[in-house]
Length: 249
Image (tube, rainbow, N blue to C red; front, side, top):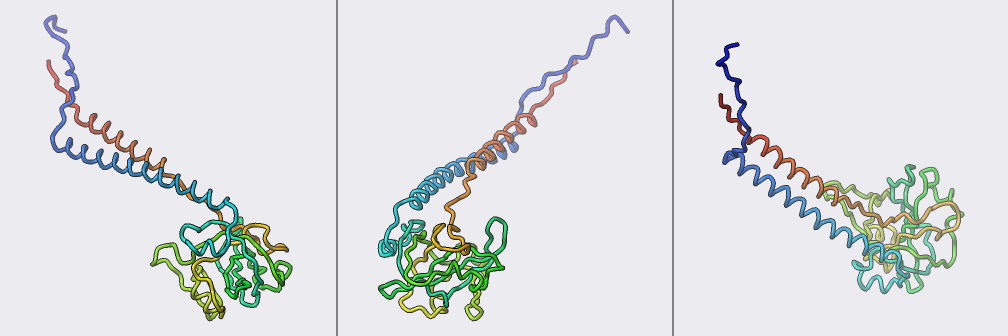
């Protein structure tokens, strides 16, 4: 090697951002941070909603008239009623599972002493016990008193996914209260709400009450962390991609 030769110096890497990538990254980070902040707002809303529903469902039972005075705010409130079951007008709510086993929910009108008729989801039964005669021990006669959670009827999913009930075949997939009351030939029907019986409200093995569970998914914190992490990653990628090497001999 020549004594006059000099080692090649490697230039240092410097941060030299270009305008277009800077603007695009700024926009992307702003959107991601905005989505994260929105999920935090949703987290606060969902947490308050869950607390409200838990408080409602564990409150002392109210009367049916009190629930009907404000059905929206009374949903998930325990309601105590007394009446006589109309077992001959039972309606199965199909496609229901319990601990992974397919079955149905037993919906039975309750004849109240004042002449009104109230639909009650009495609970789950397996397909093998769809015939009421196979669960007669769970179908008491005479006057009964029970407690159930107030529920609003109707389809709460996307409209284009709503299945059709078939009153002519007594086939029900969702609680269409006016149509069910009409199909059962009920006089003075209550159609503003129905009751979902709590557990241990009936004798016998079936139906099994307590099928309404006040549980809501609350994954908004995870979603917020995901959006904020993506924002941070976008910044790191931008910084690394905008470094330029300036070589000198």
